[in-house]
Image (cartoon, rainbow, N blue to C red; front, side, top):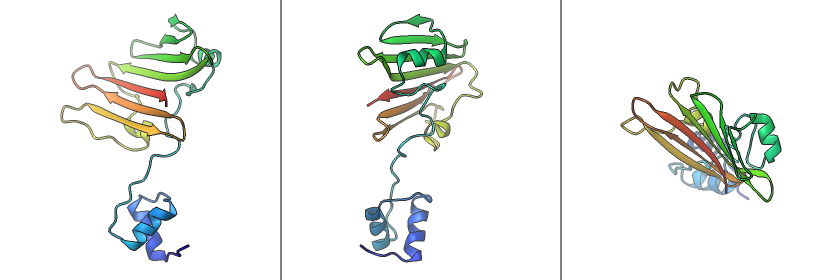
Amino acid sequence: MRTFNALAISLIAISTGGALVSPLAATKVAENPLAVVLPTPADKPPYSAYKGVTIGTKTDEARAKLGGPKEKSDEQDFFEFSSREAAQVYYDAATHSVTAVMVTYSGKLDGVPTPKDVFGEDAEAKPDGGIFKMVRYPKAGFWISYNKTAGDDPMVIIALNKM
């Protein structure tokens, strides 16, 4: 195994924003200090649950955490928390557990999660102000998408889905 000097370790920390990287990536950076090492997504993103409901939560537990759904079935529930916030929760009918959660925010978007809240980093907005970003978290077993529509009446839709 190679040993690295303090300069190589410093370059690794700078090139990855202070994140820890694998020994292989560290070797590549030490061999070529100008190399760019892109950090992989965290094992678990900052936003991995909605009101305590995660992928894999049992149906009864999800309903207990979210309250009574407006519409209910073995495969999907629809919750309406206000005129600005609603959620759809999808279930595996065989295992009675959550496979996906889709949250929709509309109207005034003050206090709505941002891409930084969801992914731990900002997402680039399109020229019209819209945003779309999706990241897969294989170790956590799900992906997350963030979609903000543009216009005078924007919406934000955050989806967590089992892989």
